[in-house]
Image 1 (cartoon, rainbow, N blue to C red):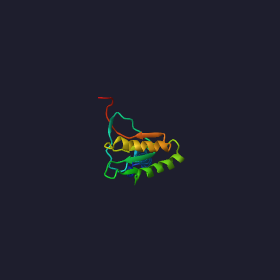
Image 2 (cartoon, helix red, strand yellow; image 1 turned 180 degrees about the horizontal axis):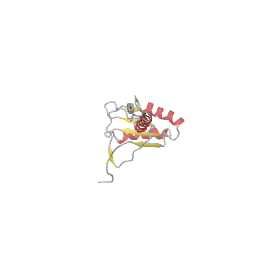
Image 3 (cartoon, helix red, strand yellow; image 1 turned 90 degrees about the vertical axis):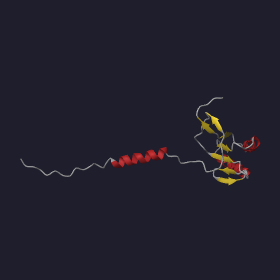
Image 4 (spheres, rainbow, N blue to C red; image 1 turned 60 degrees about the vertical axis):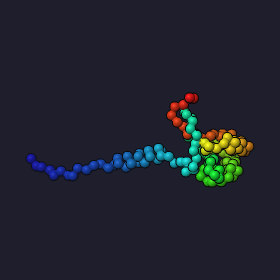
Length: 138
């Protein structure tokens, strides 16, 4: 009996590229691309609130000494932020405007933003809150 010399065993690498590609797609689909800027706003808690997934226009009303207003990440006055929303409304008529108001602001200050948005024709306005587990009234 003649013995043949065996070659070195090898690991097939043809499927490694497929697995890497699938992992890349998985991480691209599950990653978060849009995050809220670091604006010092303490949102009020509402049990069982509904979360909106599609953020189109964000107005941040803070309660610092200057009563700063942010449109997305840009600091500006409230009328300037409203004019940015007006320009976005001209291109996107079903624009959703999310108001992130500090929980210590007075109702009159938040209502001013609502009224200004209503005057320019923004029909879909939401007030953003922090959601907690559970729901219902206590």
